[in-house]
Amino acid sequence: MFKLSLLCVAAVLAVASQEAQGKMTCKLPQVQIPDDWITMVDPCTKKMKEQVQEELTAAMTYFAMGAHFSKDTVNRPGFAKIFFDSASEERDHAIKIIGYLLMRGGLTKDISQLIRDPQPLSEAWTDGLSALKDALKLEAHVTRKIRDIATTCEEPGRDGQDFNDYHLVDWLTGDFLTEQYEGQRDLAGKISNLGKMLEAHGALGEFLFDKKLLNGVSI
Image 1 (tube, rainbow, N blue to C red):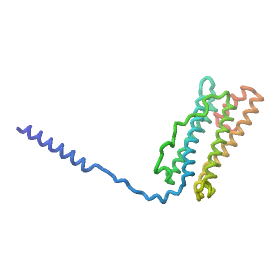
Image 2: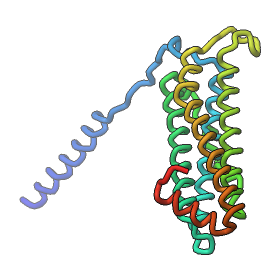
Image 3: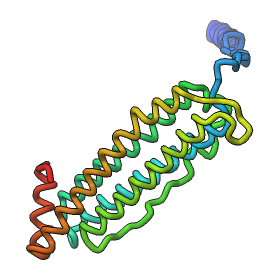
Image 4: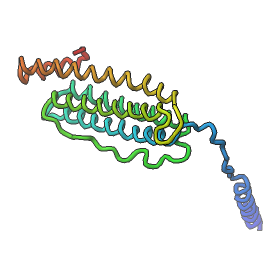
């Protein structure tokens, strides 16, 4: 009889606990947030979202370069290092752009299709010089895309929109374009020096160039 009573008490407590948990379930209402703070217009938002994909495609291309030069049949650790570093920089650029869109309210309504399975532009290169040339072409392409965003967002009247997003243009030119131009100049210098070393020393020139890259020597 005593055991039966304990079972009944346990059953009552279990039911009471379940009811209490049901009543305490946190159900937050849908908050209506004013949207007058969102001042980015659609053309700018669209191009910024597209730029995320551009940066990720560049990152995947650099990852492919790093992997290619890491292979035992190629074995150029210096080239692999600089390309893996570049891949990380491009990924960070994508994260920065997403952060800016979040700050300006450009992702509060729709984040679908922001990242669409980026693929590398290529997966193999004949030598270090061809990879550096492809890297310079890639950086020039990304630079043009960034400049296109700035042009779209700083000229009132384009596409029937009356706007001038000074902050976005200043952010792009300050945080991105300077780094792009410096990177392009660095790659151009590397291409020039490696080309001269190949002409003077043949395959040994690339080997020596790779060792300098690996040791962080400015070339």
